[in-house]
Length: 314
Image 1 (spheres, rainbow, N blue to C red):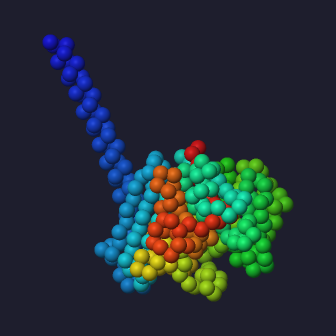
Image 2: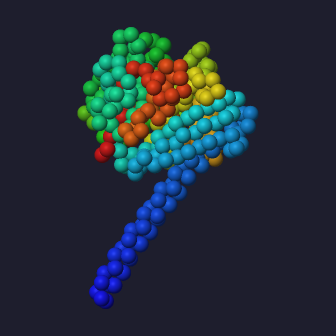
Image 3: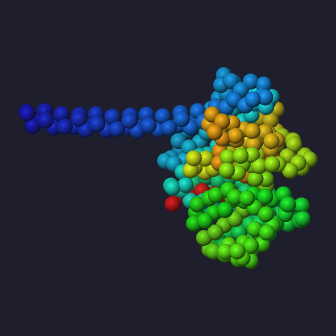
């Protein structure tokens, strides 16, 4: 009888211990996601009303080292804004540049590549395909920057070395050095580069923007990669949906990035291809934002694009 009671007591103790561990882990995840959400509660001087009463910010941890954040602002820069972010711990995941070879939806190409998550890539030729900015994958040059104007405008790049991503300044001379293996920038099999434009934030400060009528000064959906506190963040700003998401000018994107985390902002940030191309995808849930090509505020309006940046398990 005593042995049965001891066994029951032992089992009950194990159950209680497991429950406590589960609750502790759950509370830990909840606490982390709450802290992430708090970083996106913003007040931007000069906007109509930056009070938190008009902001809905939700964070969710999909898996260890990967946190999803959705931010809806009723009145940011005088309009509704909807922003989706994936915060990624680079110690747990590796990054890759993906050339789709043909125009293909980001979600489709990423899924075929076995990715955990993905964001659309740089600018491309919508008729012929292929990138119009420098694209190097594992040391092999896939495309070079095309056109005199784009050589000036493409002043930022996503550089991936041994699976680790950084946002860096870019120019035509740097592209030539990478392409020819000069100045110590030898194109090794472990280096990938995606040039894009414009560079938005460098070392915590806004980069001076060159005005390009219709592109920089009008509100569009935007895709951005930024570095913050050691994490890599993929961000899509939805747009072209009246009452739901207006999109942003590039100046507004900069102001938003610098206002995050109580005005601490981010370290480095670069703009990717936007408009109807803007797509953020994750394996668990599919497309997270509201791509605008179908004219509806849903996740079905993906555009076929030429390249993307994907995240893989290490």
